[in-house]
Image (cartoon, rainbow, N blue to C red; front, side, top):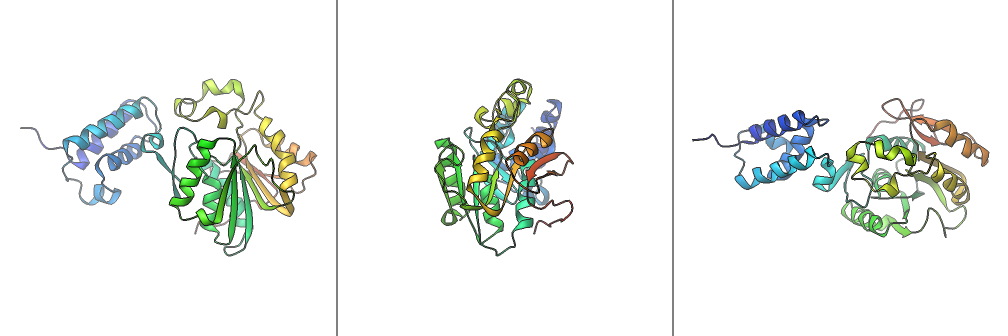
Length: 294
């Protein structure tokens, strides 16, 4: 008679399969997949490790692990991803938010006080990750997210509603800031496509095969979106406003030059937690003015 499968044995078995398949973070991925397959929480796994896993739950977990071994990201399998301190639904129509992008939040939250009223524009909003994370942290903020993808905007609206932020933001289908009034936003943020077209085939399968190429492809040199964005940011940002855009790790000098040439002052490059260039902004640098995630 075989021993019943428990949360602990299921977790260890899934972890071993992922590790053998050379998957990054096999322990974390195995736990997340186990939680989704069984309805157990992280606390349940730690405090009730010998809870029996039903046959149908094990079958679901096995199917999830097979998908992960084919290099489908865990967030795609589960349909959700954490970003900053919020949980977002993600679909194949939106870029999966990444921790690197939180460097934009570090800049924005350092510049605006907790109860300060200000307006935010998120260009190419995708899932709404940046805009919604800012609104969740700053109760006085209101915002608009734009995107050319109707499907992405539907995901962003759903995320806003799920987070109880729908009353403080709107979403608009347009190309970047087309149709928006001049000098109308205090803060303008964006995570545009910045990967050179020729580099996309060499990306990790989790990104290359599962993120929308529209959100990745930055043209031949990776800089086309910034050429389009810089004059639009200049136009819609209020005098004295702040912008913050994500960049590739080697694009700081080129993107900074575009903003400097357009007449922006105090342009700087901010690093992410991996100490790589990640954001070009005219706002504060969290390295010299640290802000706690409270």
